Length: 222
Picture 1: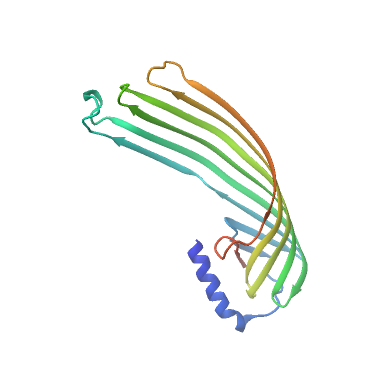
Picture 2: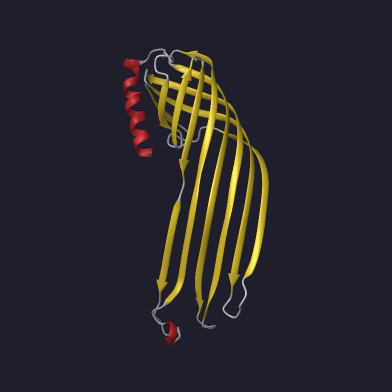
């Protein structure tokens, strides 16, 4: 997606001198594009609503079967190292914008937004201790989420009337919560060691343009 966005930006930059004109935002009220994830826009006069959302799931498994002179005969060719992880996560963001100023095909919006991120995950590993002739087991599962409020601005450039290239900047206040359970058991143990952890954090930060592939949004209007 980053490569595609870069190619689109280059083509629009080349075409801009011939198409450059002040955009009529009311003639194309709907927009769809990319703002780190798929985004849907609705233009309402000088106001604009934007919803951005997407998943971030991951499933990973790995196994190692070993042969070697240091391993006892009972585990030759058996599993000596295994790892697995699973993550189901995503995010959704709602922005409310209002046009503040414009110059030709540049439009500046004031921005107020809120976002929610979450992740439900679990992981585990089996590692063989050849001296003890047994497996060390570990498991972890948990859930975290983050609520954020954003205040800032969005600068949108319309190289052609139906496409906008945008960048956001401002400040963000976030609340982060995480609950996790870690379990482990050594070869000579019969009971699991269990640790419960609870984390609550709050942070205040700024956000803005980084580079052409991570700090620019591309929206097509229709």
